[in-house]
Length: 187
Image (cartoon, rainbow, N blue to C red; front, side, top):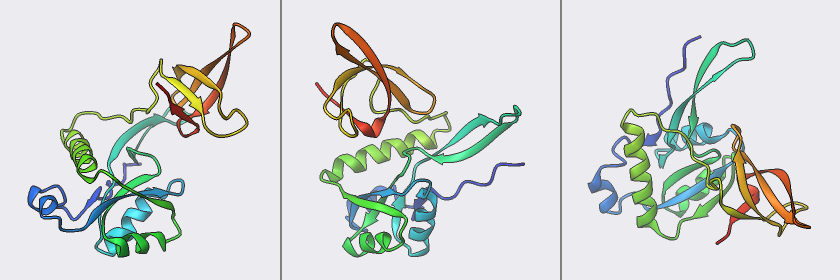
């Protein structure tokens, strides 16, 4: 079965032209946190309402249990996309019942710079893969669940973006599988 064509990753197509962003047209950036697997549906809704957004996407290759190769286009940042608009646009996006929330962006210039770089990387044609926030060797603190407050070190990452943290007690270590969202990096 052929891969379906990728849905547009931004609206309007001129979003990254300097004159559009520099003039302040389109309001401010908001980071939309979607329910699981709803990023593209939210992007379709925003596009239908003519609201500016950016949803960076990458091609993901995997194999079925029978060994067939499958390719799909997935969001670079799972459960997140970026809306550029005013308060009314943000509220309209929240009405769709596909979002967990809309995060306010404090440093608009820094986010614009970062998103522009991501767009340039994706437009280069080179293979781009999502990179986890907590690299191997990072000191982390568990911030949710029954292990809240325990500190450890990331020692290995799995294919599914999980990692194993080492918790030191009694001069020994213990490991636990955690997701990125369950921990915060510490100095």
